[in-house]
Length: 96
Image (cartoon, rainbow, N blue to C red; front, side, top):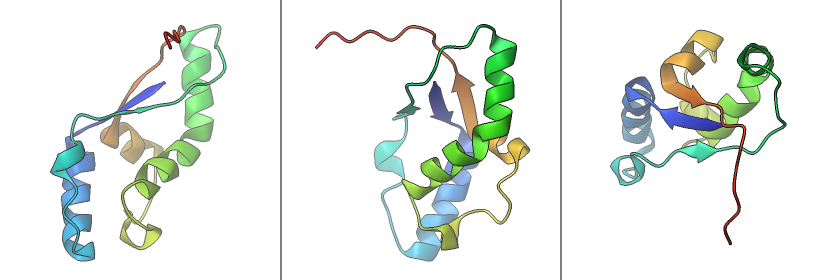
């Protein structure tokens, strides 16, 4: 699964950076997180899994940037969907 950060994520990040007096935001734009996970039989099963487990991924993503003091107040499914475009890929290749 790839989580591509969207504009609302970067809008939040800019605000959080100002509060935290940090300036790393733009350096990482376009770099997305990739998670290796179990295989799902259908896209619907994957979506159900994600709806039940999104908070774990959401917190992991936010932790990469700031401590919880700077996070959005409520980490809802809707906000997760606004912050990230989700791609599920059933095949991953190791070419090392």
